[in-house]
Length: 144
Image 1 (spheres, one colour):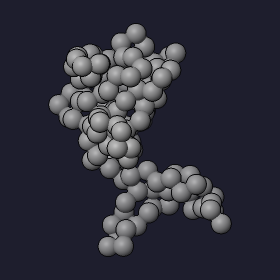
Image 2: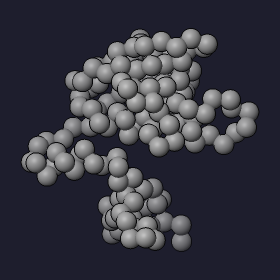
Image 3: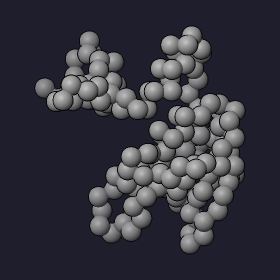
Image 4: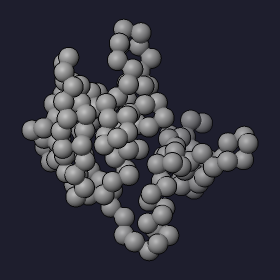
């Protein structure tokens, strides 16, 4: 059987050395890494309401691409038609842009775009360093 039973969704995933690695997110076996949940858990414990920040783009993480023909290995590349119509990045970012850095943190295999965005709140204006063609540019985007 290739599916996880529904009753196990949101269960902790434990490593062989006994550490919590994440939470089971879907019946397909997708796991949300525990470090993506740290800020959310702090707010919930303090009784605060949590809202997920929204950038509204579709991208792929270049650190996870295993194609030797792809020369870029860092960043998040926005796919064709990857800017959603309600995205706060609409008119700022473009398909093909590679997001290299947010504020002072570079995207890497250890810090992906989703993880970095989750550290902010809706309404926060954050700086993005983007490679567009051969040029690097800085943009400011206010998250929804």
